[in-house]
Length: 145
Image 1 (spheres, rainbow, N blue to C red):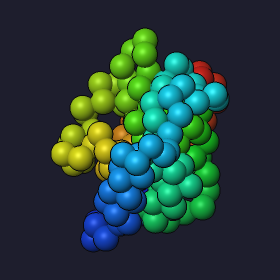
Image 2: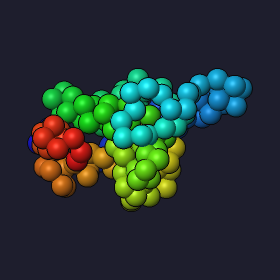
Image 3: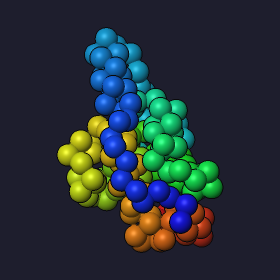
Image 4: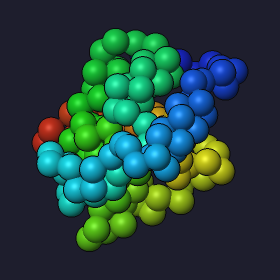
C-alpha cells in the first residue's frame, strides 16, 4: 500500500501556518472569496496557502503516485482551499466531506486544520476505494468520488 498506515507524531507546521495566516488575514491580507477554478460551487477564503497544504499532504502520504492521485482529486474538489464550501450541498474542505463534520473523527480542528482534513481524506479513500489512486480512477469515470 502506498499510503503510510503508521501513526506519525503530529509535528506538523499546520497549526503555525494557520495561526500566521489568520493573523495576516486580520491585517487585511489573504484569500479571495469565490476563487476561479473551484469545482462544484465551492467558495471560501483560504487561511493557509495551497502550497502549504500540499506540503502537509506530501508528509502524510509517503508515496509519490498516491500523493499525485490525492492531489488530482483535491485540486478538482477544492483547489486546495481547506475552507472551501459547496454552496449547493454544504460539502466542506479540501476533500469536500459531506457533511463536513464527519472529519471530526480525525480531530476537533477539522474546520481549520488542513492536516486533519488530509488525514481524514486519505483514510476515507483507503476505506471506500482502497487507495487515493483507486479513488482517482473512480473520480475520472464519474467526476465525483
